[in-house]
Length: 312
Image (tube, rainbow, N blue to C red; front, top):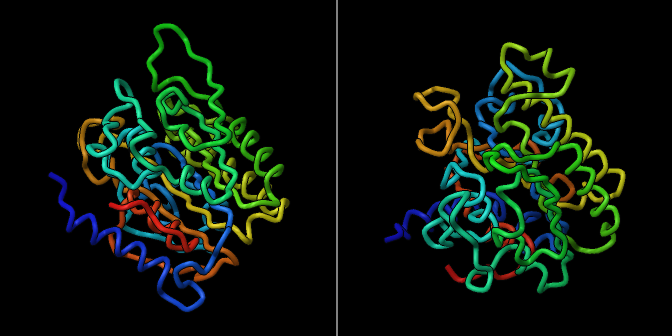
C-alpha cells in the first residue's frame, strides 16, 4: 500500500517551494511558458560543483544554477532509467505505473495521464529526443508526444544498457525541433546518456579526467548541455522557458559495493541533481533544502502553468 501521507507531503513541499514563495511566482504565473526537461542519465548530484564537488568543471551547469533554483535533497524513486522517467512524466510511483524495470514492462498511456499528454490537450507541441535504447518508443513512454526521436541502433546479443548514441547527436535533434516550434507553446524532453557506463568520454575530457573517467563523462555532458542552452538562447526560448535539469538516478561507484546501479538504494543511487529555471530567471540563485521527489514534477509544472494536475 502506498504511503500517501508522506508522498503528499513531499509533493506539497516542492509545489510550495517553487510556485508559491513570491507574488511573481504564484501558481499560474507562467501560462503557456515553454517547458523543457534536460535529463542527464546516471548523474550523481554529489559529483557536481553546484553541490560542492571539486573534481570536475561544469561551467554550463553552474551557469544554469545561477539562473535557477537549486534543490539539495531531490530523490529518484527507482535507480533504473525507464521506470524513473515514467515516474517523472506521470507523477506515479513504479508500483502505480506498473513499470518497475527497464525490461519486461510496458507503460500503458491509456490508463495513466502523462505530462506531454496533459500539455498536448492544451495546445502544446510535444517532443522528445532520447539517447538510450531502454527509452525506445515501443516501451510506451512515447505516449503523448507528437515527436519522439529514438533512432538508436540495436545489436544482436548486446546488453540493453550499452545501446546508446552520443548526446551531441541527440541534442542536435532536439535543437532543430525546438527551433521549428519556438513560436508556440511547447514541451520537450532532452535525454543524454553520457555518464552511464562505459565511461568513455570524448576528447579533451577523456585525457583531462583520465584518473576519474566518470567525471570525464560529466564534463562531456556539461558541454552538450551548454551547446543546447546556447541554441535556446539564440532561438529566444531560454528566457521565457521553465527548464528542469535533473537525472533519473545516480551511480554506485563502489561506495557500498555496487559499481553501477539498479540493485541498491543507497543515497548515491537515488539522490539526484535538480535545478528549476523559471521564466525571466525568477528567483535565480535560491537554494531549497526540503526533500522532494521526481514524482513531484507533474503537479509542480501544472501549478506553474496554472492548469490542473491529474487526480492523485
